[in-house]
Image 1 (cartoon, rainbow over the protein chains, first blue to last red):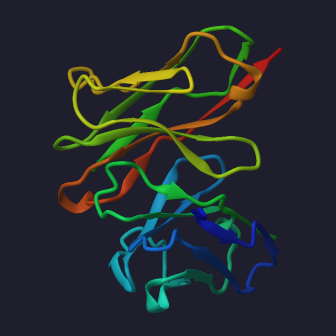
Image 2 (tube, helix red, strand yellow; image 1 turned 135 degrees about the vertical axis):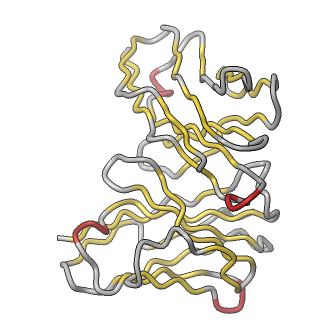
Length: 115
Length: 115
C-alpha cells in the first residue's frame, strides 16, 4: 500500500509569492489532516478534512492559507501571499477512522522556506 | 486546552547507553498517547502508543507506560544504537470535546547517539 505522499519535498520562495503544497493520502482514507512545525517548535494542527468537507479548520493561522480537497482525494494547501513566519515543515496525515486511535500515517513533509 | 510537555533537548548519548525522554501531558478525559519519531530526511513515523491507563506501548526496544496518576508517558530504551538518532515527539489524541481527532504534540527532542 502506498503511503501518504507530499510534494514538493522542499520549496524556497520569496516573501509575497504564492506556494501550493499537495498531499495524496492513502487510498480510501476519508480523514486527512494538515499539521505544521515552525522553527523547531511543536507540531501544530492546521485542519481536518473528512472526505471533501472541512471538519475542523481551527488551526489555520490566517486567511492567507487556503486548503482544498476536491473530490475527497488529494488535498492542496495554498499560501498566498507567503510571509517569513510561514517557513516551516508542513505535514499531511491520513486515517481511515476519525478518532485515529491507532495513530495517523504521516507523509514526509514539505519544508517551506520563505526568504 | 490539551498540552504536551517534553524534556528539552538535545540529548547526546553513547551507543548502548540508557535513554529516558520525559513527557507529561494535560488533557481532559481519557486521551490516547503516542510517541512519533522522525529520522533524518524522513517523515513522522508512529513508534508506539497506549490507549488507556497502565498500558505499556513497545516497539524496536522502546517502551512507554501510560501513567494517569502522574500524567506521564516517558519514553525509555535500555541500550540505544546509532540508528536511533532522530527527533522524538510525544503526542496525545483526545477523542472527546473540541479536540476530537486532533493530535497535540510536544516540542520534540533531538537524540544523537555516538558510536
